[in-house]
Image: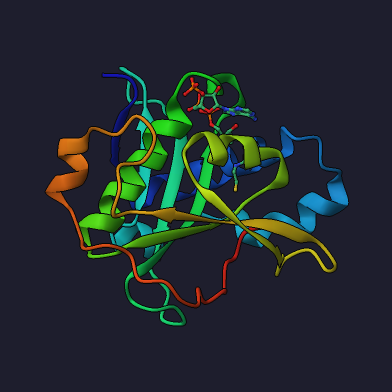
Length: 188
Ligand SMILES: CC(C)(COP(=O)(O)OP(=O)(O)OC[C@H]1O[C@@H](n2cnc3c(N)ncnc32)[C@H](O)[C@@H]1OP(=O)(O)O)[C@@H](O)C(=O)NCCC(=O)NCCS
């Protein structure tokens, strides 16, 4: 099975942060933007310790991509957030992003969440649409003044793209409630 998804280790926080920076820079952002974005691209040891950071690796355990699940106090407890999702540029287009997305969705469902929001990089929007996420509109970036980003919502009561129905049913929750989705994303 490619890629293998495993929990991140605390000792690889620095290498995973560097992966996030390479991945973000892949879209062609300039140095000033990358400086402003840097804090939001950090993979912190605390999240790793809490078992919320997942790494997609190849057969030699080399990290190809990383994702973080956030469950924020400011949101209803059944709403998760995809806090980070970054694939190393040489590994893009191989299914790593989709595998990490499915893994985080399954983990959020397992923790009782019915929805997952994503404040997306505009260049990544077609990927999230391919994954079945619904665009709710635009929301402000908290890292780059004046920048707005597409806000996506994933219904975790249904299988996400290419997810096995049985896997989704295993962590099933009743149908998602409608209502306000709190913001608070830290995506840039
Ligand atoms: C967006 C990103 C995570 C996608 O990861 P990836 O591993 O390259 O994507 P995958 O190979 O898993 O693609 C899954 C599907 O999405 C499609 N897809 C991926 N990126 C796409 C894009 N930019 N435009 C259109 N479709 C795209 C693929 O064609 C594939 O479709 P398929 O299921 O029909 O085969 C990756 O490009 C990335 O890390 N980008 C830079 C950082 C970034 O912006 N991250 C998101 C922050 S919100």
